[in-house]
Image (cartoon, rainbow over all chains, first blue to last red; front, side):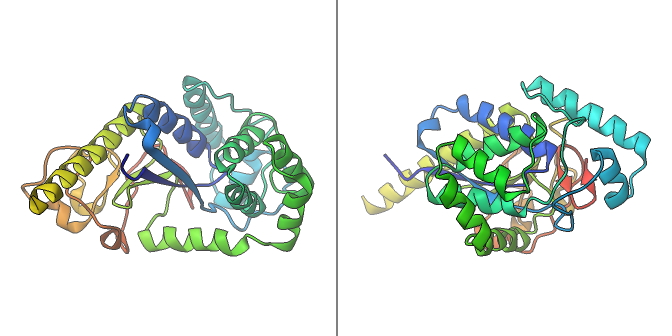
Length: 227
Length: 64
């Protein structure tokens, strides 16, 4: 079997389109014949690094204060994104959501990656944030979530307290900057192609098929040149 | 908010490609009409202005 087709995904936890995009990508991947030879890796992107760990207010309060958006427009935006989320089977509860700084959450994702649990951790963090009203900025709650996906709670806590993975988060952010990524989710296929946004599942399938076809074509050309 | 709106760099804005970032070299007249255009090496992707035209993306100014 050839090397896995690599998909690198930049996203944030506090990013409604990232969760929707994750689910749409997964649905697209499920329809891709070569899905068993695809490697997915998540990378950190902070949309609002100036967000406090504890924000006392609703999501609309936060967006009004930090983004300067009018409340009426925000209500429409949240209703729309809630409806789109529901279309892919996700329940968004902005009424429960606890807005927070996601830096520690990203560090936890790197901890999870080091222990082979990044995909599970990503899903758990997003569900906690958007559906359950969980706090994904505090070490205590993050350690609990880590344990829920089979990671060692005490090790996770120690990693967060020491900032062991802070440099890994920053490297992801630097790479995003080098690519020119200024919005997420953002998908890079086989280190060649960038796809921006929570595209339709069919689009992701199409992209995967085309990248795989190009690989086959390149392999054939290489074989011919050595014949 | 449609899911399949184009997101590309400014020079490719009229090509109806679907949410795909491509390098300058990909904008040739011979490029196939497809969401994925000519190969863009990782190094070629660096430094491009990925203008988000709309839809299904969160950026520094909020979620479109």
